[in-house]
Amino acid sequence: MLDLSKKRYRLRIVIPAYPAFNIYSHIAKKTTALGPVCVATAANKMGKWDVEVIDENNLGRFGPKASTGGGADHELLQRDRPADVVGFYGGLTSTIPRVYQIARFYKNMGIVTIAGGQHFIEENIAEALSSGIDYIAIGEAEETITELLSMIEGQKEPSHINGLAYLKNGEVFITEKRPPITDFEKLPLPDFSLVRYAKIKIYPVERIRGCGMDCEFCTVKGKPRPATPERLFEHIRSLVENRNAKQFFIVDDLFGQQRDETIRFCNMLGDYEKSIKIRPSITVQIRLDKAKDTELLSAMQRAGIETVAIGFESPIEEELIAMNKRVRCEEMVSLARTFHEFGFLVHGMFIFGYPLKTGQTFEMPAGERAKRYRYFIRRAKIDTVQVLLPVPMPGTELWHRLQEQNRIYPLSDIGWEYYDGNFPVFEPDEPLTAKQIHRCAKKIMGRFYQFKYMFLVVLNIFSFPALIFFFHNIRFGWRRWYRNWRNYLIRFVGWITFRKWTIAFKKNNFLQKLRDAQHHLRTNSK
Image (cartoon, rainbow, N blue to C red; front, side, top):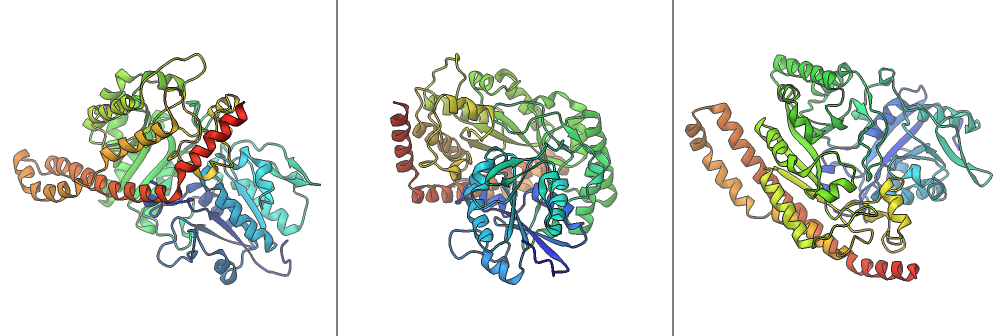
């Protein structure tokens, strides 16, 4: 409980460390999660509360790092800057064991603990409340956190706060559901200065929450709820002018929803960039079929959008149907090339070995599937790729389907820390095996990111003058040269990242855990 003699209190929000080195570790050192910053900013407006965010994946040079196991040294943090309440970002399933570990540490010290996160915490409320968490914020927490802190400060009963779960007389008690936020103008702009120690180079920003695509494997559902284009523009402008920000990731699940307003935003941003003569690098997530909208693509060009991240998911028709994806394979190559022709760098996201639904029949050897992926990536001229395995996130339709079929490996063998897309966590469709899909996904990535690109980076530097002369156009020649140079560099860095992940994988002895999980799954099925 709080020490009521204090004049001010401190809330610390922790973004937990990844369980081990993985393909996200490199980029995580350059950015942070947007949700915890939004919640921290809302709480920081309260009169008696000071707020800080600790991102364990981005502690910069001076952050207090734990001597073993990764993450922050919370004993040192608590000694130097004691927190009265500690919140945890539970939005990534693979980091949940770390959340529980830190939560128990603080709870044993008598600190009030709070957690939230759509991907996991909300679907495992009883587990979280028995693992060191006092309160769970259900849904968007900007409003919940202020009411909860006021309640804690006043030592009152929390039952009047909507969107909250906690233990009452030893039983899980859940209050009335809080409706999703629709009026974003009443919220303050996220304040990244609250993230202590972190060195942020890529700033996450948003305009629209929600997604209406209803993909089976995704937890983000519901009607999209937009803020005004002016709000997003003002946020980017303030980060450019106050924090010298140069790189942005618009985290909206689908950029281009509310088409006319998106175009208006792009035009506003393009005019601003022209006036200050600075052109930030912007990445967006967008649907493949938006390539048909040339007016939108032109506006995106003008706004300085450099990279489009597209969920291709699979070049195999049967798998796309199972995922509820509303695009067909025959269109995918031409649409991807359209983005390429407009000058965008295309980041392709794929899911290898997606399980078919009951009644669907499709047999293709793992090696042949991998060839299909590599062939598609080459034809579509995709600049960078991410190939992951399907993950049945708790609460998704995919999770419930595989649970009913008794195909998910026991958590005692394959725990939550493996739910990051890098490991098989369920029995795949026959004739595939878990070992095969894991090996093939690695092979696709390994063929794409190779050591040889180091030499091509050097060679490309020397080719620059000749390329400019050949095209007789400095601007066009620069764009052609930069794209190749950038891709070669990323593929070489990707090789380094992939190699580190492979080493970490071998040390983890995952294959033995996989054999144990398969044995226990078969035994339990009999």
